Image (cartoon, rainbow, N blue to C red; front, side):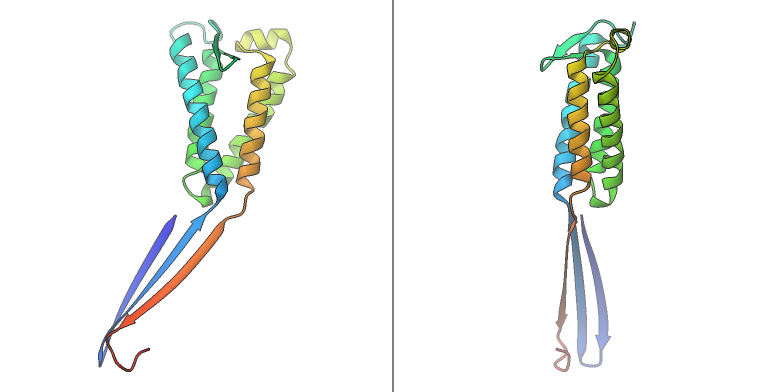
Length: 162
């Protein structure tokens, strides 16, 4: 994110203008944005193939070798949108970290789930491992440092201001 502030002062000998620029960026923004887009795409494919007009846990479709139902697809769309919001600015890293924690815990729940739970959700353990890894990556990305760069430029046509 980039911020610009401009100040102009009239002096007896002319005009002085000061421009301050500040840029903030975290590499985690790129990672969480890409993870969000991946989840949105996978969720949209799952919801499109499975539909939402009937039961949300059947039918089950296969996306990149992972079993998806409409339940999983809807969850992925919501989590993906929140990750994209979390990647919009370094100040929103808490959103990405929170979504990462939820994905991590949901992945553990699915990966360790009984057969009855997996049938009720409409997925399999491999999908849980995938969500666990995506959640861990989102958490790690939210913890990456923010780089802050500031610069100030003063321009004056007054011969006494330097």
